[in-house]
Image 1 (cartoon, one colour):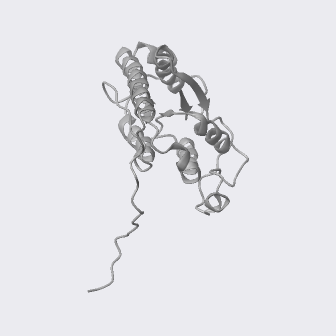
Image 2 (tube, helix red, strand yellow; image 1 turned 90 degrees about the vertical axis):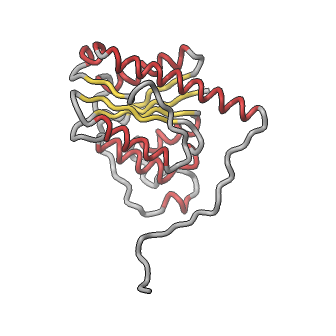
Image 3 (cartoon, helix red, strand yellow; image 1 turned 180 degrees about the vertical axis):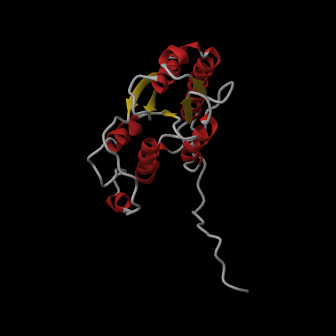
Length: 212
């Protein structure tokens, strides 16, 4: 089993990476393979809602000149996910959200029913909105959201400060352990012949109604 951890920071090995690495170490100790993938610093497009990915039917974005399709390749091979973001303006990093919009629009079927969690790193505040933003991608895609012993966040303005956040790092370790436990439960259910819940046909409505 393997967990893909996505580093949504423009800085490859700073605070967000430190938190993800702590969770990865706990997963590895439980016998789960891990990979930390970085979104990088190159320009990233947002989703333009063209629907081209659905027409192609290959679970890839039509734009193939950035990291998104490379991440989808990794996501297809993974059994679980942890997505980390720094906090700049009281929420998740905009570049990461652009990545997730396109990943889930094009490749949602690759990740359905696989456990996932969002984590955040901040100097002071904005972590809970960032985590909530990330987790919403999972919740709309039939993915179990893995919990920990507290909201999965770390605090500090540098790697050294994050390493002093003992509670935050403990939360990351417990997130890794809980993720490993959930993966084993899912694997045991699969071996016992269990199946995913059968989905009803999608009902799509809006709030506009004709006058009575």
